[in-house]
Length: 130
Ligand SMILES: [Zn+2]
Image (cartoon, rainbow, N blue to C red; front, top):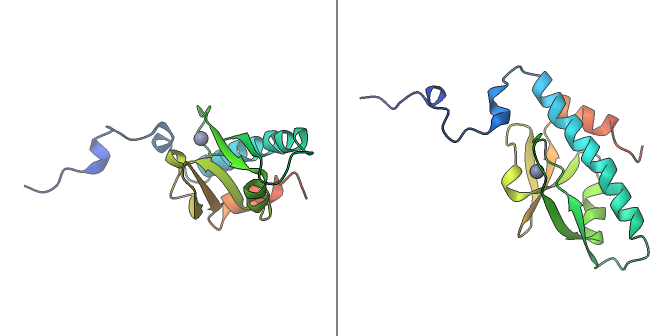
């Protein structure tokens, strides 16, 4: 008895994994994340006068289409994320390992960076600060 083929069992596979059209899916993920980033820039701007160690709720910058999570991080952490256009902050369960790699592991959030290739390129192109 060999191990069952993992692709024959859809149990537990997140929705995004069903679309295996390479390039397209990764680009869509990157676009979703870029949109979240624009919204979060607005969040930070709205609390501009708050101290660096103030906690704010930012929306999760993952690539999942149905995501409605927020992450609670300080402005200082958010600034660290934004210091590199390839970096995003996400709710910790929303990592897409073949598109993102973990840079920093918080309690409830992860700071991730786009892997080289399409995701990183789209992330840099869509950076609201460039
Ligand atoms: Zn998310």
